[in-house]
Length: 496
Figure 1 (tube, rainbow, N blue to C red):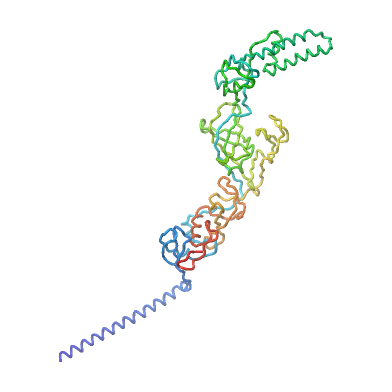
Figure 2: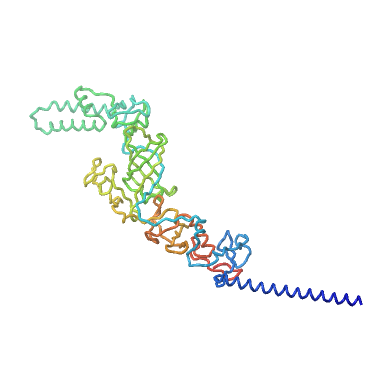
């Protein structure tokens, strides 16, 4: 009896457990259904949002995009998930980001504007002699140098100073011929008109001319005639004032006609020879002012004007030689000094150069220091002056004639193409569009824009590389890939 009662009790307990399990299952099912209904009701917008397929890309080669994880076929790095905001493909060449993302990318922009910009051309070079102010003292007759009045190089001399005492047998013979011709001339009667008497006068004049060609002055010839006797030495005088920069012969040396004895240079005017890169030639003009400094006088600025631009480029250094005329009245500047020079060119429309001081002026094509307000001749060489405009200068009066420019940091340049990112106006979120432009030369901190942009547009000047990288991740057209890579169609294929 007791055994049957225990069996009945066990069956009852098992039935109660089954009922409780069924109740728990029904309660869980009803709760899940209620939560799903609440979720749909609370977020209807998410229910209508299209699902975005997860993409994976290579952080080293962002053009590699896959539908799933794996390794980059180029570098072997593991692919990483693409952020969902970049996985949504937008318009070609455009990137749309949130305000927070734009702040994190540290994007800065600047307006495209017209303005007169300054191109600074920096050059190096050295000081040299003015070749037009260097002269040689030579022997005009063959003979022997018996005395040099200047003993060493570097001596300063004035025009007309004694330089050389030269003995010449040929000079003695010419003097004897002069004395004989003068004596014959004195025997002619004042009223004589005979051919022979006229010939005597002509002969004396011819001998005087020959002595002048030998280097004797008129005063020396007159002294010989007055004294009635020859001199055995010829004195050679300095033809100009300056510094003796070379002594070629010593005392006792026999020389021929034309032998160089001294070289004299006038250092009151010097040349500065500079090397300009070919990329800077667009801003250099004849007659431009040049400022330069030397190691010898720190902080002191010297000025000169470009007097010559070499028409031939040096193929090895890719530079062009410039020559600058510099006044050196105080003698501070010395040949062979190294200099650092700068030319500041105001750039007008079309990349032309303007100079308010030169506009409308007339300038000598040989001496740039000669500038006049009207047509005429050069005071130094007598050449006709030419207009400054014929040398490449223009005058800009209004801002409308200023060139269209963008900051130098705005374009991304590959060598063949230049890409800028324009910030589009009136958009809900920051939107940037890639655009190819044609650039002119670099003028200081600005590029001149030939085409592709309009005045008033806004271009990115900082963060443009980050924008370009984001476009590469999206396989859109970018700086390095103007056509874009397209959208991948399979997990194992490349983007096209």
